[in-house]
Image (cartoon, rainbow, N blue to C red; front, side, top):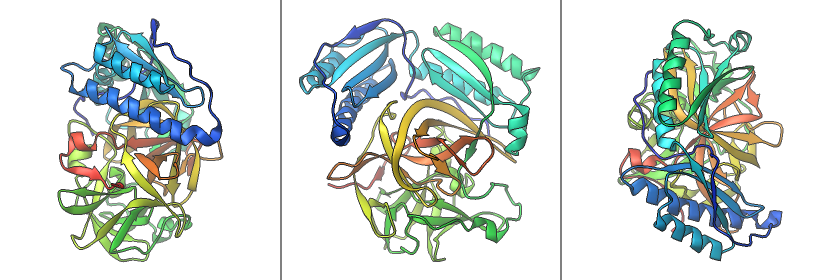
Length: 436
């Protein structure tokens, strides 16, 4: 589907000139990393929120190293005194912030990236990486596309014209465009292929029961195993993300593709009991800020809890939600019905990713994550919660599982998450349920 442009502050890469805020930032132990990351996230949210309220966004990449206690913040143009004051406050807490000069802000590069995505042929899957004053267009090879059962995108004719136009637009804001053919393909991580109206073998939607609780109805949490009914009548299996509220209605925040990018789809738990219907997909995925996000609107009588399942009965509390695009370099955890609860993820750079569907592309803003273990995500983990590493109190909501980037299999060491930081920006009144 063709998407309108977005001009929002999210993540980007770094440039050349460096302005340092001096401080002594000693390395920390692995046990201290969760608390250190929370302190970093608080500082990053302050900077991101200030930039979001400015007349023109100038924020670039944010790359952190929680072990070294450092944060690199890309900035296009003069760094305002208010931002420097936040960095001074952070230095007093032992967080060393370095400002890195960039030619283009992330908002400017996102505009170019979405123009390019909207102009590409309306089939096939590809991704546009955002980083270092540059866009990297990653197009699967013909063999990779065929292995993943998506339409190949030939680098010729109309595609080359689109790339030439993007190069000119990027040059206008001081950035470059590169093109690379890859052996990996981005794909959403629902349990079965999403083919509108096509019959789906009911046996194909049965995935191994891992950590997601299967039978909650009136008391809802994140990390549950849920199933959404597609137009074919079959139920496609995903994982619930975070509980929340929309006005006074209890909801579950999950991935848009889990409902085939449509509202009013019936959703049940794995025990077969209805828990709600998909909603707000049009606003969150089809509007001016396209994200792989939607909600399950539960009954007004349902009660949500600020927690996610990490096992059949074990849980982690949700202490809050990140309000800026997740910075690169930080350690994350996820809970999926297939891969289970694990804390082996590291946040990577931002992407505009277009998943291939029989109706054409579905393009949205996501972020890469990499696993230090066997897999980041597997099919069936879609919609599940991605959080910061928990402290003794709980974890911060960061995103939901969107997809995998692999070679056509059911799992991949690289995954895509849909950050939830823009929820309140896109839909007023929608919020994550967290501890008071």
